[in-house]
Image (tube, rainbow over all chains, first blue to last red):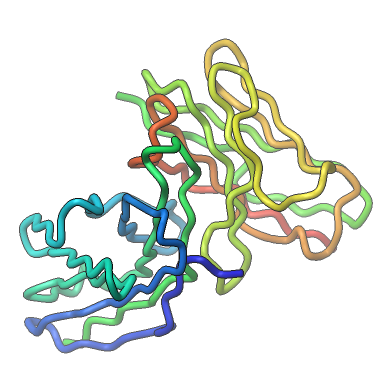
Length: 113
Length: 113
């Protein structure tokens, strides 16, 4: 039972354009959502997060949108840069229950020159 | 500030053997979580340790066990290795039980032959 789903295994985007990575979740009890970025031979690194009391959080080129009614969140990267090529993991947890973080399978983003 | 370090980085074992993986948490962090990342999958939660006690466990059999030491470093032990145990094992540390940002190490790549 996959509670966090990233249905696109890979995505290719032209440098300078917007990258949109999508994530769906099934557990309505999740109240905290995170995006992690992973380069080969490195551990995942935290990118951006959003609490369920918000619908948008922005940090520089990265913006996360949360649609609770649709149980959907997305990560927007604009403009996309070559260094953004990596695997992106969507993750969710129940902060109010001090619960574990559940990860999706990841989306591999390729930024094309 | 010292980040999360894991050892060994790579190792090869044969089916039925036992393995111990080690993790030093980031300075000041008292919680360690272990994740298994199989090829093409997202990190799967194994268990979490907080102040030397197990606090939460994922869907892994008892042959996966762990320890946390007074300095908050941790070990993951896997007995009776199976071929499907081949994966990247990620350790992550955090401050307290809040299910927020995790700081990951680079992982230990285990191959079971």
